[in-house]
Length: 417
Image (cartoon, rainbow, N blue to C red; front, side):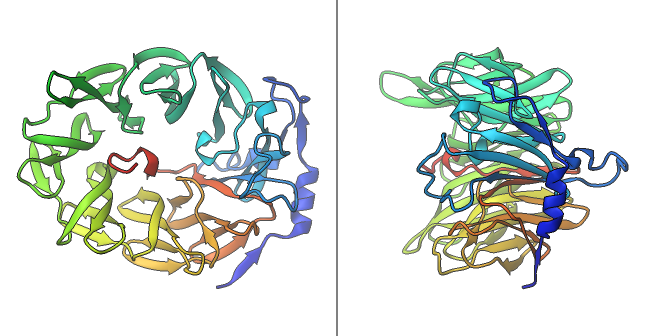
C-alpha cells in the first residue's frame, strides 16, 4: 500500500505562520495558536473542508501508557484540509482533557468539556464559554441559534441533565439517557429511561424529549426492554425485545418488524440510526460457542456480519453508503475498513481511537488511524495512507459537508457492561 508522507519542510513553513494568542491562564484561552488553516474554505464556500483533530505529545513520550496524564505537555491540534488550523494546550492546568470523547468539531469550531472535582466546563476553541456545578460526562452536544445544547450523564451517580448554555432545561436525579442528542428537523431530541419500583419488581419507563418537553414513549405491554429510541421526521421509533419473539423488533411508522439474526444467537447490544429516514441497526451478537460478533442490519432482514476478532469502532452513514473501521482484537491481525460490503486492510499495528474517526464526503472516504506502538498517526484516504508528523493519536475526522454520523459508544450501549 502506497504511503504519502507530509513534507517536513512544508510543515515547518506552515508552523512559522502560526500566531500565538494570549498567555497561559485558567480560562482566558492562553497558549492557543491559530494558523493558516483558519482560512480553509473561505475563498470557496462550496469546497469541502476536512477537519482532523489529534493529540500531540513531546517526542519520545509514550502517550499510550500516559503516566503523566493531565500534567504532560500536550496539545489538541486541528488540521483543516491538512493545514494546521489551531493548537490548544491540554492538561489539568488548562481544564482541557486529552480523552477523545471530550472534544468535538461543530461548524468548524472545537467544543470541549472538562470535569473538575465539582463542575463541568464547556469551552469553544480553547476559551471557556460557561461552567456549571455538576460533574457530567457530555454524551451529546448540538449548537444552533438558541445556544449550546448539552446532554450530560452524572459522573458521580445516576441521573442526567439537558441544558442550554449551561442552564437546566430538564434534569432527573435517576435514570439514564440513550447516549444521543440529535436534531430532527428544527427540533433537538433525546430519549431516556427511568426505573420505577413496586413492591414486587422494578420496571423501566421510557421517555422521549423534544425541545425540552418529555413524553412517555407508549411501548406495547408485551415489550420486555427497549434497546434504543430515536426521532425521525417527527415520529418516535424504537427497537425492543418483545415477549414471544426471539429477536429485537423495530417499531416504526405504526409497523413492527423483527430483525433477522443468525441461528443460536442473541443480541448483546445494539443501536438504531435513521439516515435519510431509513433504519440502520448496529449490533453485537453473542453466538453459542463463539466470541461476540458485530454486524449491521441495513434493513431488518439484511444482516452483514463482521469477521471474527474485529470490533466496530466508528461508523459513518452518508448518501445511502455505510463505512466503518473495525479494530483488531490481536496485535498480529490487521484491522479493516468496511465500505458497502467490501473490506480493506489497514496497516498492522494501527486502529481507531475514539468514535468519530470515519467520514465520507464528495464520494471520498477518510479514516483516522493511530498506532498501537506510538508510531506516527495516519489518514487512510480511499486506500492511500497519509502519515502525519505528530507524536500522538487522531481523535476525529469530520468535514464541513458531514451528513449523518452514528457514533457507537460501547460503554453506553444497552446490555453491554
